[in-house]
Length: 274
Image (cartoon, rainbow, N blue to C red):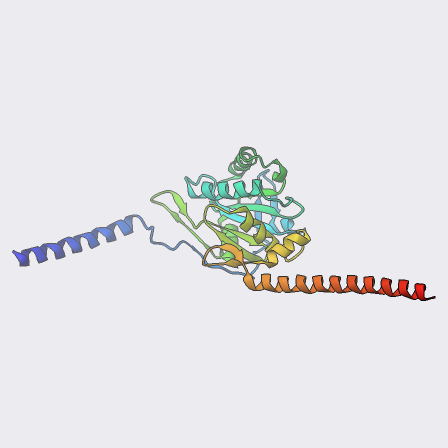
């Protein structure tokens, strides 16, 4: 009886494995979906796309100002993940205390080459109106293009995705990329929510000191990106350094003030003696 039970367990195990292999062949979800970070590399600015108004435009056209770029790769008929990513980004953009056009811009590239201008135009309208983003309507660009040019950009940022014919969907990671004004890859943010703090610090970091107030730069100095927590965290060492600098400045100010006060008293005493 015991031997029969063992044989039955082995048979069920082998059957389950065979069934799993069959499912794997029918639904190839085991293909790789990932982001291979290429920090410091540049995206191909010579690639050509079609903007939401139907005009052909080279990516380099968007990089003629000294501002960083938030880049997203999505497709417009995506049933779920793309919507969540763009919703999360739009929600943060709504509360971002930076000026679109002067301090940053957003570019969304459609990874589905079969979707054309109509989709891009409608998607842009939905997000600008739905999230009250009238202030960035001229600085959030929705682009479509050929599979070749889409792949060039995707490969440059290490964005690995594929088309699943069984589901008729594109399988892709959830991430946005922050670029410098020259198109250099500065930072990746992952997930479907992008806290305003992280988005702002990422944009400031990508600007390489070209945007933001003095206070913004001080705050950025106090934070560093933690890839394990996928967020910007307080950098204690820099805070200690900053504290030391402020302490020295405070002492210098106090000493100068004391020296001036002492000098004034000395001058008064000299006049009294005369």
